[in-house]
Length: 311
Image (cartoon, rainbow, N blue to C red; front, top):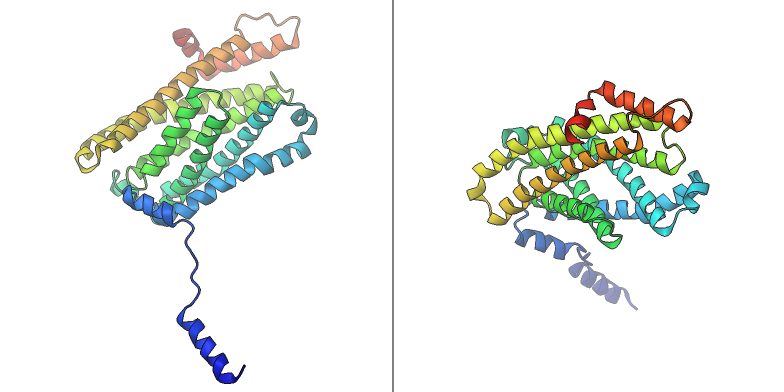
């Protein structure tokens, strides 16, 4: 091949450069058609978040569990192993999303300036993408490994709300609602205590008090009594600027999640009272001593009136 032919081929290649195909183009197009203005530039983040939590669930969690708790983990049933892995993923999500939400709240003044449509690509885009990917994984797992309608509803409603916030819409409130996950940290510790032979231990007792306190504070008081009424006012004030489906999804979804929080708090109190009855004798069994200690912790924490009023 002479030099002129080689030069000709080089020129042809420069005229027709190789182009990389966007693997997310169909998803970006779907997001645009759905009116989710900020989702196209964040699709890759949502997919990466979903892939991370799925990898942690299916690959990393089993490997870590066999290495760190081989006797306990290997003796679990298939469903038990899956539930164990789910709690690891859930704990990882808490450790990521709560600091990320606080970082977003501290550095995105645009949200407070416009509580209905405020947005910050640098912070809110990242936070909403991570949350959307997690709740996509959570919803799929709740369906595939079905145990409760409540878990499916929680995951699906949260997914719809966070994906819908890419419009943008009420990111001020969705960012703050992620602080609800703080109570999940203590819920996971409580669960692992049960599975590792630490039921009724002082660690579980103190953690149980933290669980009750944080769940009541961030989900019932902050979520139900503070966020919900303010969110409802903002939503209603801009309802004419939105497709009707947004009012249905966000208002109905918030009502569903708030109701689940109240219901789960009631079930927690009910379960604790059954496990640690207040009138137990403490003279014979160690479990009775631990139960009495727990009852004292609950009474001193100010939750005693809830047992009397709710139970």
